Length: 392
Figure 1 (cartoon, rainbow, N blue to C red):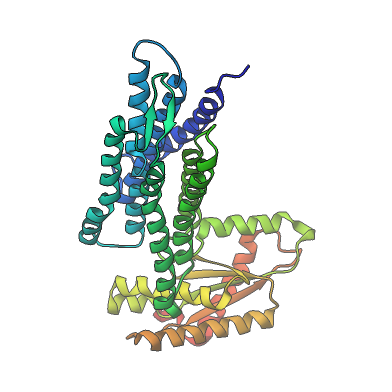
Figure 2 (cartoon, rainbow, N blue to C red; figure 1 turned 60 degrees about the vertical axis):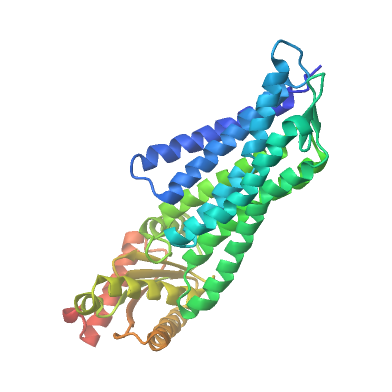
């Protein structure tokens, strides 16, 4: 017969193994040079580990009769309830950093965030004698208190608030940036919003199901998905523009070429910003960085989900599309028109436009390098015709 504690300990042990791997990897990568959001993410993992250990402890000693058993049960239970709202606190502070709030503003908000944590602390300590949230009876068996619902409120209040804040930020950010919205906007906010969903669902399940502590297993899922998103962003995303980077572009193209004769025709558009060096020289590198960001925004607005696009390096950008050659020409024209509208919208002291070379895949082109060489040659020809090569 399986012991009552066996399912919970088995599941918790597996979850602890996952969290241990995540924590080791994040600490190994950040080493001494750790940012505030990375530090908070590490503490979220550590908090989840502590909650699983405390939860496992309650399962191991609950109902057991040995010297000091009730003391241990009380220790694990009180520690568990005290830490309940800490994950939500760390999560909302993490979101505030990701949304770009200043240190002063974050410190002000922290005082507000600590209110449910403090109320939970008081309720937990009072429950040791008053049995409000929990009770350990004379047989050393854990019992739910009459006000247990308060613990769920304290645990999830900040998490729900963080979800609402990120959702509102996402909408506001989209409206404010308008013409200058980039893919990084969605890639940053979606994982933040998703993080809260599994734990909140876990709370709902936990109200009726007691055999395994679902909440902290759900949080493991959230941390794992956030970790994967962070890893993917580091590997595939250009940090300045929010577009895919050269590494991901090469990988994407290599996959297309591996299909060989099964591959449907596609085109590669290689672009660069006209007179980009002059923007840097005349207006500074901050202006140059802004120009690159606006170029990324133009690709996001014009191409949407209809094509693959990336910043390949410097002021070079790439589009990979199934469109025909005439359609590629029309796409380039729409990008230039969009850049013109951006310049007017932001009253920029410089103009933005692109030159482009188009290469069409065919079975005799056997490698991405050959396709790039064709596109680069045509880009050079266009810039030469326009007389811009000497001034870039």
